[in-house]
Length: 267
Length: 219
Image: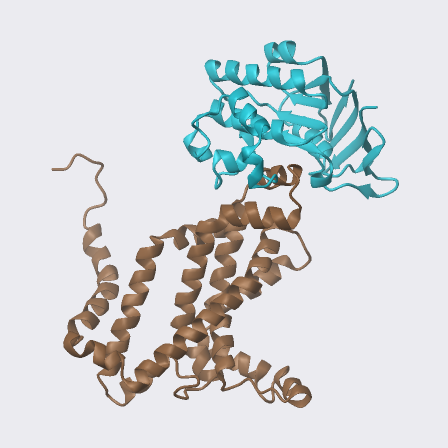
């Protein structure tokens, strides 16, 4: 017998199905994967095109989240302004919205006859829907909230007095931000970037609604998996295995850091 | 020619009134119970807080004036600070902390070397603040303040939460620091022995608590 305080008996028995329902499908994918043809399958024409497209669009979407999300997160953490809680609620909305609904919303905003899209087309001849840019916007829409939420929590954790100290030692607001604030939030920043990128990489619903499913243009890996699954190919499984490896790799790399960041942000 | 403060800070249900004159070369100690506005006073001098009404000036330079709406940003005031816990940048080495805002070349100056010796920091330069003891951290913070070109030095309870040995060390470091410093020193402290040893004058915050708290600090 281990000498420790006892837990309610039978808890393990009830807890096990919850773990199993997640673990079993992961194992099933690895179990069914034909490892001898794995590399061939993920490097065939369709898969390779989808992989390159996914990598490119998800990296651009993550960079956009970094560039535009960082100032927003800083303002949310450090400044009081009108409608702040409303702004924050809207920033987080895509996390609870079904992604496909997000895609529909993007279509009505930036589609050829959308609120903004109609003007873009009329004035500049720019059409966004069903382009690679649309795929990037869809990914940004669903993934940026993760970045903003984690970074707001991180900026909120930064000791105001340390920032103040930097100011008294002659650093202006920008230099203080660059050398002190960013230095202090660096671990969270890396976690936020990886998490955002992983979410962008896995984006499906908003993409298929707003960008469509055109091979080579908007068919990212999740869309390719979906198409291949419908046509019954083995490459769907191979691509799924690859995404599974990437996702597990991300979680192992972060080691639960994003969970604690979100938890702090919720307080 | 001195640091002159005549101002008020109003927060909901708290009103702090400060009237101080501190001459260069002197060390003013501020005492008072917790939450009476000692740190807020330092913040107003440093420019981390603006006065609600009133004026702060050093010699003929106006830092803050509510009537003319002037406010000089902290980085332009020539103030160096040792805030509670040292206020070190935890992601930088001791050396980077000490040369903060000075450029890497400053490390090779005789002034830097003498500060390392004076504050007994040999062997600590490449360490991160989290690996130092409380006393060592305060000595680094003092060295950083010593190296910064400043006309005002603000210290917020520099020896609180230190054990007796470290406290003596840090006090000794402050003493040698003050001897060669010809700016204005404002020291927040609870410790009567420390004040007796280091300060040239004392100002106490008087506080009256009612529905609204009113604190007054004058010398």
